[in-house]
Length: 206
Image (cartoon, rainbow, N blue to C red; front, side):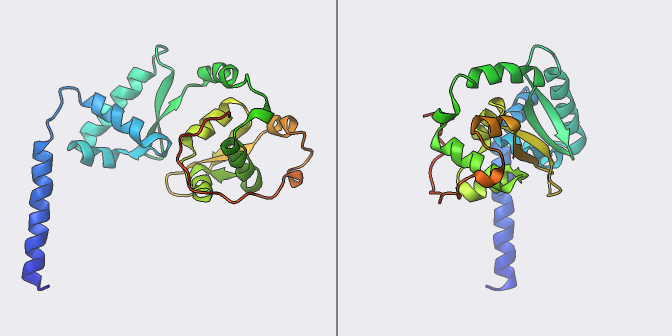
């Protein structure tokens, strides 16, 4: 392909991109759009610069929108809040919710944990401290929902942040985990099982 043909293809691609952006109707409440995007990215979070490109706003305007959302969810009327760690923004559950979450998920005994929960716990126990992405690489499925449930059960806890880009949260097992499974040391854990690709329609319990 010669240089002239390559330039023509690049120009066509840019024109299609511009046309797609023109086809997107600018909503009256851009904050709602940003909230939806923040919900979609989940625990991974998103940088203000990425949001600015997505909503076709300047970085300054995007940060103002994020500040407005932070102010909104700082109210005690909401159980979640918007945080910005290392320029990465994400929604997290407020600490006041944790005791109720523990009650919600604390009705089942450790023996009734699902296979997916046990696999996730085993990975954390063997590899701790470990990030969500590392867990997902080993299991081959999303671990975000499972981690939230295990946190609520107080079987795992946050153990600081990794130095990797985005500074993801590190996880480790708790004393509650050791007591629940009657373990004196982590050396008593069995070998890790082989994992199969499966969908993330997994519950904490069978």
